[in-house]
Length: 197
Image 1 (cartoon, helix red, strand yellow):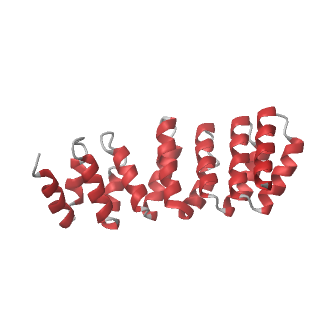
Image 2 (cartoon, rainbow, N blue to C red):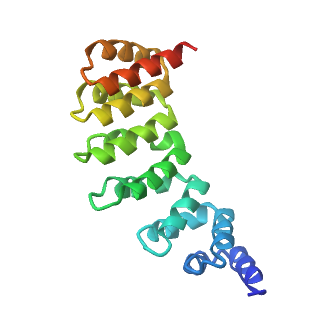
Image 3 (cartoon, helix red, strand yellow):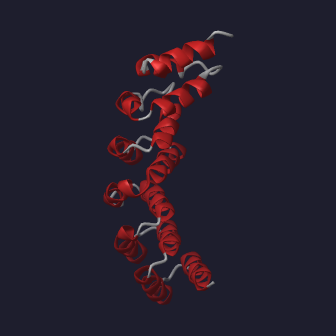
């Protein structure tokens, strides 16, 4: 056990990414291994992407990719986000990594708004709201006006409030007069009040 940190350091210096990824399975050293992979950075990204679906290390790999923030991880992460068989807690984790990557993921997140799965749309909206990039305003306005699920419309209202540009504010003002669902209407009111502060 005492020599493991030295072994990890040696593997990091030599950029032995595949060996380090295998070591992520060892709970006793996984934190140190993850930190080593983050320090390696971009050279570790492609092998990490290849390990995203490994049930033993996938969670750690997502965290590492979020820390590295390399745009090459966006498409594989979006693919995981929209898969039908994923648990929602997993989708949330993927969405949070995409938020860390930031603006570079906006266009693909906007495309994912077309998912037939309500839970996917909710996570995508949450991520877009946290990124708060105005490129998402128009697609979120459409979701607010047209999505069949009130919980999705409610989340779109919150996301538009986070973006807070004039187009979003105007859409929220219009939506509050047209929305039939009380919870969504209350959320829009709350968002508009927060924007006035």
